Image (cartoon, helix red, strand yellow):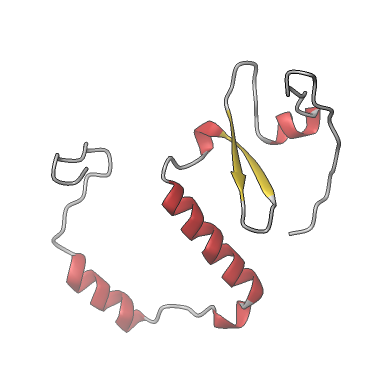
Length: 108
């Protein structure tokens, strides 16, 4: 992904810095908001608004892997055909999932 806007900031003696205005606007940051940093294997640092991130580091790593693979190999992308979608619905049609329900002791 190409960078469209760049900026520098300086660390203070206490390792603090000011987030540039265009970054605050892009992430919809307000005073006292939390910022999340993700450091990718290539050294790239991704800054996100904490409310917009997942709390699962495994999921973030997996999604980064998928993103990199899709970017490097777009020829591998393919649509699911109707038969495959019907098969998935047959397998999962009667499964009820509440994504907001707390995990049981066995699942933690």
